[in-house]
Image 1: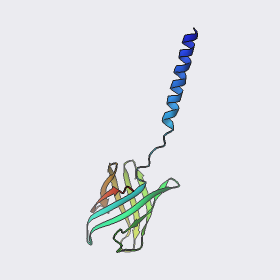
Image 2: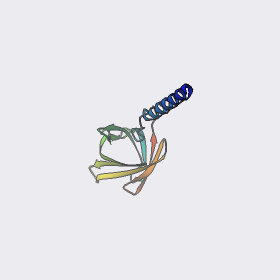
Image 3: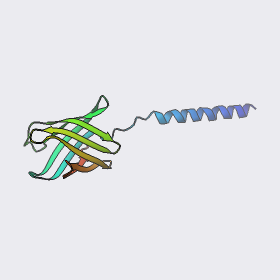
Image 4: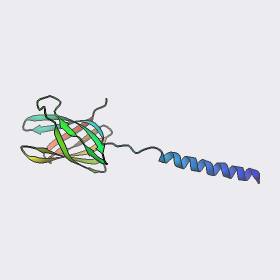
Length: 128
């Protein structure tokens, strides 16, 4: 009887430890990080933008920068919408008002979508 009790105690202890160990790993935040975005076919030619999306108070935020240095001012991101593997970045321009850029996850380091539903857009995760 002692052997059965000892076996059941060790078995239950093992189940408890295994159950708690799975909840200890935090979920990953896929969209947060630095991204290089390429917009193809704009009137000014292909455009590159760099952004670092940071989660603040549960929401993604950041700004779009021109890596070539032609535009020295960064464009602030006004709103970011997340829906599963889809991301929509809204930013304000002086010429066209608020613009939406939709991006969908392709793999761990690539996004693909469109700007204003007209221009093909791709994004590549920048690894430091």
